[in-house]
Length: 113
Image (cartoon, rainbow, N blue to C red; front, side, top):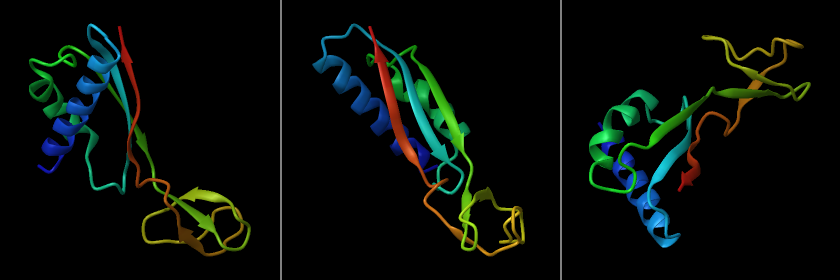
């Protein structure tokens, strides 16, 4: 449910930027949503149309790229997706440590016309 205010804010920012650029409408908004961000891309999609109603974002395409969580091996440095219940690197068997990859919740671009 916390996706609603986040989606509303995305629409507000995109609408304001489009107006400042003199655009007629927002065509597409691209987001990166990490699996560990605390946000669910499907919920953002669900709220987008109601939040966009009456703004320059109404009718825009919302493109969400899912970013999977990655670990970094302490031994060999490889990045890898964590296997449930394991922190072992598939390349060398070393211990993985958390990274920031998969925590993103970012507006990547706003396309206007």
